[in-house]
Length: 335
Image (cartoon, rainbow, N blue to C red; front, side, top):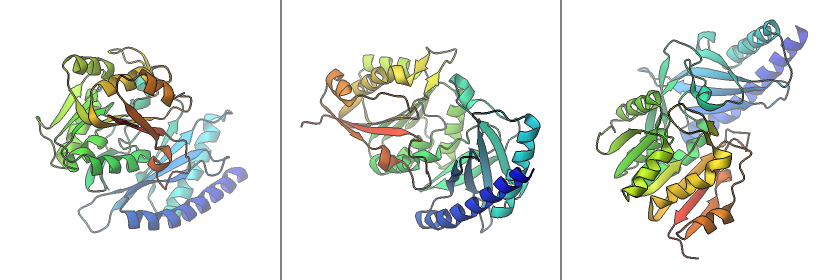
């Protein structure tokens, strides 16, 4: 028990230190959801995200999501439960957030649909602001909240670049890139995902921002590979494409997808529907991907330029600089 209390005290002090630093940055940048802690202390394998929900009053309400990474060794359920109670108490007292607004989830390497499946059964939707946009965040029902915080800078890029462009958001999840594109003045935004749950969530996010339009912000239920092949046949083109696939997916209604194996095929299909002088943002959470720029350039039928923008796309609040990788691929480029 003493070890638990010692670690809880370490965790509490670290949270306070990070919050003091990041809250100033967040206020300056207008950020209302960010990562406070990410395995800063090896013996405390947690990630902690804080969300400030919009309210009708002058003050936002803070919610905390604590993710427990699966340990390389086993703790008994009872030991883990006791440890987490100490951790929850430390988080609550250090940040003055009541325990009913703190949610703890187990994060481990996910495969297929399991990465998106429910972790609970009750509704707890909150509204969170990001830039000029608002999003519904679900702090309780799913492993992920509906807003990937590590892609905040990339969403800002899309917002700034979308004006008057035809935008395609592949593996669109809850439509956060789509909302930013539409808010940025895109001529049209097409969002493609295989999940009705997430397409409906994207629709609600668009409605929340008064951006939903059946003609201009289309929501398309489809396997992405199937969608792209059909779009190629129909000679459709988009000026700006966002492609952020899962590392692995084995959905019943689509072929097995493995980004480490299929990244080249996926990028080449995207390039075939990318307009001249268009731009593709390709991102992945896989650490094992062997993204070969020369192979993509040699395989593409059009002239392209590739730039690794990983460093610029990872936000200030993420200590883990390997949270994702991202490339900007420009078409019609002549060296």
